[in-house]
Length: 416
Image (cartoon, rainbow, N blue to C red; front, side, top):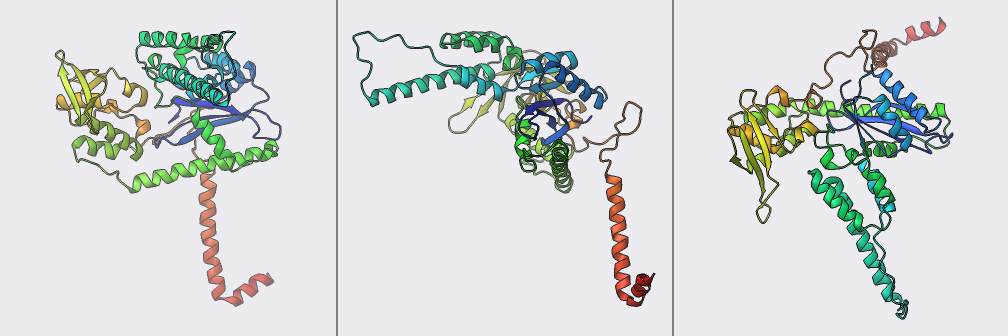
C-alpha cells in the first residue's frame, strides 16, 4: 500500500528440492532498500500459472495495481501481464536484455578471402583476427547499449538502430526485440514512473541473499520457513534505517530554506539525491525564451568546462512549479536541477507540496491501511505477542531475583 507503485518480478529455479520456479514480488521502500510484497512457488511457468499468480497477488493487495512492473522477457509472462495488470506499464529488464544481446549479436562476416591466398599464416595472425572480432562485437554491444539508454528522441533512436542492424550478421533476435522497443528503449520511457529502476536487479540481489538461508535440498515446508528468515532480515534492516533516520539529521552543504525543509521531510538517502540536484542547479545557466519558458543548461567544471544537454523548463509562478523536458520528476519523484534553477529564478525558496512524494518522506508509513472488509491491516501480526512475551520475561526475571533473596520461599514452592 505504501510502496507498491513500482514492482519487479522474477523467477528462479533450484532454490527448493522440487526444483519448481520460485517467484518474488519486490519494490523499493522510502530508504531505497528492497521491500518484499509477496512470493510464490509455482508448478510451472505457463500463461495460466502466471494468470493465477498475478490475480492472486492483486487480490492480496486489495486490487491495487502498480504503476510500473518490470520482468524478464518471458513469453508466457508477457501474455499474462496485460490481462491482469491492465493499468500498469510493463517494462523489460535491461540487464537480461543485455545478456541476450551478448549471446545473439555478432558482427557481419568478412568477405571470403581469395582462393589463392593462404588462410593459415600462424598463431599471431589468428590472435589478431580474434582481437579484431572481439572489438567488433564490443562495438556492436556498445551501439545496442546506446540505443537502450542514449537516445531521448525516437527519430534518432530509429536511425541508430538501423545503422546497428546493418552491422549485424544474424538479425532474428534484433527483429524480435525491436517489436517490444517501447518496453526497454529510453526514448519510449520518458514519462514512465520507475523510481530509477530499469531492471529486475532487486530480484537478482534478493535471490543471492536467499542463499544465506536456503539449501536446494529443503522440502517446501522447510523452504518457506527459511524464506521467512530472509524476509525478517529485510524488515529488521528497514527498522534499523528508520531508527538511524530518526536519530540523525542529514548533513547539509548549505543552510538554505529549501535544503533545511528537504532535510526535515525526506529520508536521508533521498535528501542526498535531492541535495545533489540542488548543487547542480547552482552551476546552471539560463536563457529566457518566453514569458515563463526557460532554456537551462548545466555546466561541469571538472577540468575543462563542459555543458550538458540544454533542457526546456516552463515555470508556473502561481502554483510554484516548474515542468522540465528531462522528465526526471515524473520518473523518480525527485525534482531535477533544471526545475530547481527555474524555481530560484521565480524567487520560490520552499518546495511546494506537489514535489514532496509521501513515499520518499520520513512519514511514508504513517496512516492506516484497510482490507476489503474495512478492517485495519496490522503491519506485524506477531508484534502483540512479542510485546507480551517481553513483558512476561521482565516479570519472571524480577520474580527470580526476589526468589533468590528468600531461599525458604523457593523450598516452599518446590514442595508445592
